Image (tube, rainbow, N blue to C red; front, side, top):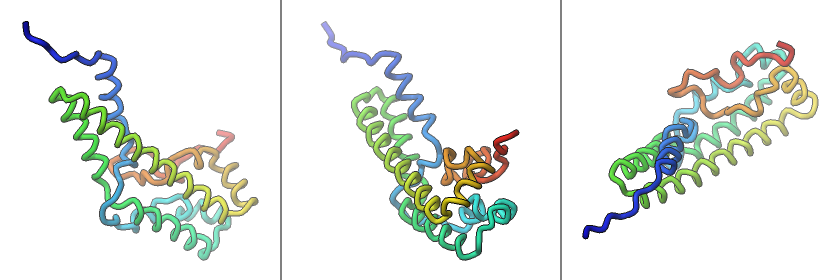
Length: 171
C-alpha cells in the first residue's frame, strides 16, 4: 500500500495564494542597494506645490521631511527582495512543498510587518516636524493621508500618489 503525504486543505492553499498575490508592491523593498530618491521626493505629498503652499510649508521644513524620506528609502534598499520571496512561495506551492511555502510565508510576513512599522515611524517623525497647527490643518485638508501609504510611490501601481487627488473631508 502506497503512503501519500497528507494533502493540505483547499482553504490553506487559498490563504497562501491570496497572501502571495496581494502583498502590496510597497513591501517589495528590502535590503539591497538604495533606489534613486528623486522620483520619491517628487511624488511625496509635501512636495506637491499646491498642498505645500496651502499648508505654508517652508523650503527648510520640506528639506527636513525630504531627509527623513531619503533615510527611509536608503534603509529599505531596492525593490525585489520581497518579490523574490513571494515567487519562492508560489514555486513551493506549485511544487507541493507546503512546508517550504509556509516557512517562506512567515519570512514574508515578518518583512511586511517590519516595513509597515518603519513607515508608521516615518509618519510620526514627519508629524512631529509639522507641529500641531500644520498637522491638524493637513488632517482637515486630507483626512486619509496619514492612513495611506506614503512609500508605495506609484511604482507599478495605478493608485493615487501620496498627497495626490485625495478628496477633502467635506466632499
